[in-house]
Length: 168
Figure 1 (cartoon, one colour):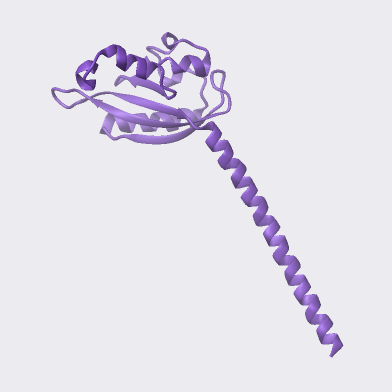
Figure 2 (cartoon, rainbow, N blue to C red):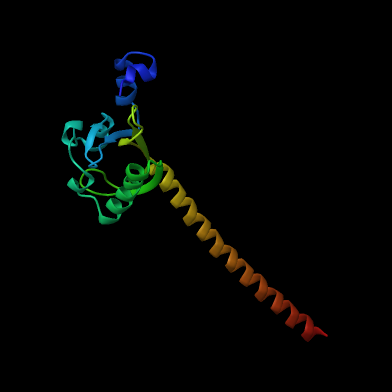
């Protein structure tokens, strides 16, 4: 794939954009091995990109649930040529307590339109997910308080009915 042809410029500009992007960008071949990963991985894990090249998702200490969800989306992308989007949670030796939104996009051969691999773009959504979880807990707490208020209002209404009935 000729990147300069696709972007209308020099590959070095494309490399700067890719390697200084806050999203984690990977390229996978049909055997699901990582062929490219941008410099963001170093910021996230402390490992250089070269550590990941040639490895698959199975070469890392990810939980089974993570692997199944990741591989399912990657398989659909590679086999059917369909873009896939997933949200996934990671907590292992490389990434601690982190949520990602991952998009898988197929790469097609320019001559015969066959799938030759896939890109993944992973965005760290940990802050957003933790805020969402906090909001959900607050909503749950407010629902409990609301139900308690309704119960107290019903008790007061019953008490008022009894008092008014007794006063007659």
